[in-house]
Image (cartoon, rainbow, N blue to C red; front, side, top):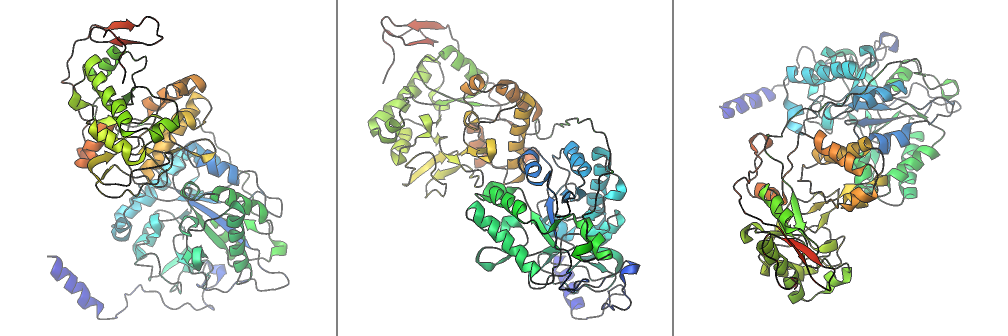
Length: 626
């Protein structure tokens, strides 16, 4: 059936008959701003070198407003800053629905910033936005507008702009969906840096090049505005439409100077409004980007930061810089009593799973057995847990075999855990000794390691060491380089702690605050993974975090209670999923309810020694050691 359909389309494409609605070339004498019409053009309405047009910059953010971007980036970067006329700066936030904190959206609105629409789902497929039916797009844009009205308390008449996800305009279908949703302008269409088109209406044919998407509007949509995104030049002089895709790296000063240079290029050309697309993940993936962007915002003091809506108001009533004042939006008022809404999603009601890597010293093996019988995974963490990093970096193979193989035997003997169920290990202080550690694991019957952290901007999924690893070697000095067929690496997932610094353990993230703040920080880390590649999130928890950080226990407990749309599983369960991957709709938490063992706990103390343990079998005559 597909072949005839394609042939029909091909035949139709051979004939160049325009549709009845195809827009004609713009006539400047007919298209007047007084009639809410403007031709697409690079011509600035103010062209006086002695009193030029104001240089307007619209910083735009198009993503959910969540616990990672709002307190860490949005508030410190944008709030309490003024333009040259002393009025507050303006910005535009195109908000999608998933995981958004609407109390913060309302705060942005009350601060005078523009709130626009970025769809409900923010579906990650470009094909979805390129080929969706009109009704789907109407539901995406109109639905999100209604949500913003209802949950953020923003007046409907103040929500007039939209950006489609991934900038994928579906030609005239998207524009019609906007119009049907009460949207009056689009901000999804990038203009090349050598052809800086100013905002215009779709009364007539656009002269703007169609670049990012496959289909751009060709029909007439009277009075509907296009506010082009401004391409800038990134690494190697290549054009980019988002700061995150410009691939510029360097010190904070170098990043700031790059951005100042892009402003200068506009200043020296047609002074078209500069619409910059900012994604918060740029700050997470590019070193010094936050500090550099902050320097840029502080140093560029002779321009006006405004919203996209403010840009359109200026283009409708253009005045030179000497007469321009930043629009004020200080008459807004609303009340918001924040309510956290959590809805069970992927959780299938199965018992949660966890992994415990156990070392020998002072362990109560009756409790270890209790954890195992509850369905949790028990792994190896050495016998001694020697506190010297040099020990683990330089130990002979025989010592590591004794550490890991010995602890596996101890778990089997004193906790009654079947040998075949002890398959994972984590080396103390995450100090892998290159291939020596891996060989010691293999010799000990261990089939996977969970000691190797993956950076937050390169979330590697579990893999085997049949071939060379692409994972960065960070904490350890030497990582495996040889082939170990069938041996698995389950990366620890780095998260972002205080000041956005990466950390591989909750105890080293240095996040402090109330229980609610700690819980929201952790929920935010989950949201980051959810918005990236959805790699399994392996979190390293040390109990001393609860002792050294106030409110950490209560905050972590709140996190576990509130994040109800994910699956908590063991590392072994993660590997079973990666070996047989299924979508969320088909996933069921593995059940480990067939375990049985008897334990008569015996406290074992040894005369003349400080060591002790609790065993499920009679105490051995001498303290177990290597």
